[in-house]
Length: 241
Image 1 (spheres, rainbow, N blue to C red):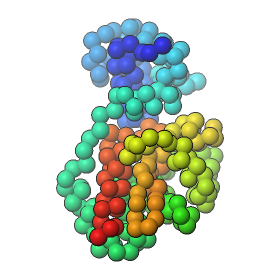
Image 2 (spheres, rainbow, N blue to C red; image 1 turned 180 degrees about the vertical axis):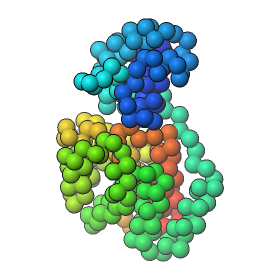
Image 3 (cartoon, rainbow, N blue to C red; image 1 turned 30 degrees about the vertical axis):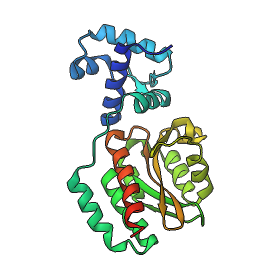
């Protein structure tokens, strides 16, 4: 059953609060911070419905709720309001990578460093033709509480040598969207469900690349998706000059 408008508003508030805090979200927090015009009791009742429908879940030790992968995907597909990359940031990035436009590997590596810095995540690029794998910002993931779980971090980092895993992951996506998001059960591995992968396809000379970032599934998509899109377009544009 499709969620009602009120349930959608509550889900949006809950997801955005969770993205910001990484903490389970209570009905009181939603009522106080998001001005939905309904009581905490009403919000609790609607959250119970959202839980039954699989959009949110209750962690074992908390009274609050967190979004499920299904809830996050619904938010991304239907509720997300992206923020354009500031022009000053676009200009700064272009200036930093411009001198490498004639050397594909250096251009990719410089762009990855900038993308990792601006998103605070791990950035990666995979050449689909020669299986070349580049990354930057591995230490960034340790800033997210999700990756304080040593088993999760070990599982993710062990995949940095597995080009075929990332190719198969990216090839799941059908359609013409410039930027794609995979998270949760898309990884096909329960331990990786807290992760998110935001990526685009890039043409650089004769090579096709997968370019993107890896972080927690609760990453700030409204800012990250436009950044990944901009980097993909920029590399394709200046790499042909």
